[in-house]
Length: 149
Image 1 (cartoon, rainbow, N blue to C red):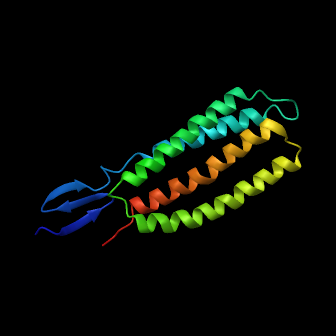
Image 2 (tube, rainbow, N blue to C red):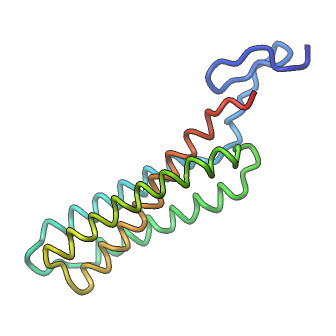
């Protein structure tokens, strides 16, 4: 009985022993949520100063750290051999489309409200990270628990 006999959650039982099939996957969800938290903190901090001129050091640093986290996730996903890439790509494509629309609407609101200059650049960077990070988390979660039997 060397085939998969029973599957519960993310643990596969082969030949009477438990094998965790997600143990070798990178921590994409955790890193992605961490990046999202940094983006939210930076966005709330930056928007709390409007309509006055906002200091940009903290939001810029938070956005850059979040961007590095998203780059780390991308590299980790490219190296992962356990993740079903087909289902990841399919879910990512549609989630990305939805979140680009959401980020575009938020960008429009910022411009319409009179956000200009460097503050708009930092907010735009945060929206771009948001528009890539959330679909990555969604697609990874779906692909991680996808039953390929």
